[in-house]
Amino acid sequence: MVNGQLNWIYQLILSENDAVLIPPIPMPYSLGQRLLPHHLYVLSHARLRSTSTSCHFNILPSCCESDYMSMELPPSFKGHVVALPFPTRGHVNPLIHLCKFLSSRRPTDVLITFVVTQEWLGFIQSYPKPRTIRFATIPNVIPLDAHILDDNASFTEAVATEMRPGFEQLLDQLQPPVTAIVSDAELAWPAAVANLRNIPVALLWTMSASFFETFRQLDILTPAPDRLLSVHLLDEQAERIAQLCSSQLTDLRKLLRESDLRFLKIALNCIPRLAKTDYLLLNTIQELEAEQINYLKAILPFGVYPIGPAIPFMELDSSTITVDHIIKWLDSQPNLSVLYISMGSSFSMSRPQMEELASALKTSEIRFLWAGRSDAGWLKEKCGDNGFPVFLDQSSNCRHIAEVWKNGRKVGGERSEDLVRKEEILKEVKMVVDVENEEWKKIREKAKELKVLFRGAIAKAGSSDMNMDAFVRDMF
Image 1: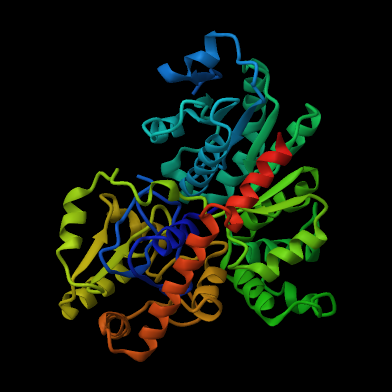
Image 2: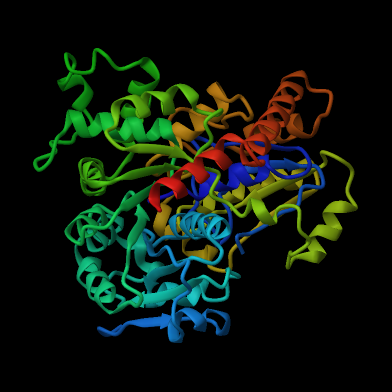
């Protein structure tokens, strides 16, 4: 399950200076911090900000949170929200930022308990957070993060079947009593848990609104419990797909051809379970996907709130950053002169592809900043000799960036398994840093327009700001 890609796209769009994205092959994706998606960006002094097991439960307040743990609750107390992310980086980060948005609107009268596995607490316990957010853990009943790629379908199945008992036991122990649940939409069961307890539930969809509709259409074509998925599904369902537009068909064909169908069958189960929710939160902005969002609002029987981007935009203008040496180097470079490359977190490029990229960069003699990893040696084992692995919504994101939003270009052919050669990468890289290149002038202008669009959405009285206010008002 992925969404780190959209969040880093959003974060670069919102940065103070120009940032242009080139998605390689169909857009590879990241699970967030380890570190970033392996896309190419050209940065103009842009500031990089990384959102840097037995049956035992922990509730971990800070000293400032002890008021809620040991003292009488204030008369204004409105509720206790429990937040549960899907346990991968690209899902944990957006939900914790959503909790911060919620806390900023209810700074004194709402307590938020953010629930993760014991392993995940080790990843996030140093994250800065408001006094009204505390962490709690459930046992490590799912494969550890380092083993997700060994069998992603088994990991997803474990999340769907093994986490619920520990979560429900934790809910029984939490004080004050839980009054609402906010969960990742790709967890198929928290809405049912909330329904049984007669408390409201909100689900956060961490990918694009467009991909939500693609996933919904696939659920209609292959309903549970059988879900007869195959690469030939659309050919077999010719009559039923007549109402789908060409772009949806393109995304569906790529999804079926390039996904692990066993994983996809499990992942799709989140769609019919949405019927049990009270609120659906979208990690996008109204202005970016207006047509799709308006359509979803019209057909879904619950509130739909585009509240994105779920990134730490409240901190974008602050000086709290832990990579001063990198910022100092970036600030010393000419405008639009630095290429940024990230390998991503779990789903990353193969060693042959990495070598093609490195060779192109060396030949180009262009300044670049490469966010690497210490464990790159296992990439070939995981990815074979292919180019960039493609996962879930990545092809759709790539198509939107290159064809719809037009703030980037796709590199490579139609098949993600094809290696992108040094010569093609070199050609694209040189075009990116050529400030006189007409095509890239248009892309940079579009990137600037999107930055204005996003900053307007998160500003006071902007669309996302007002949608978040409306959600908080409706929830409480």
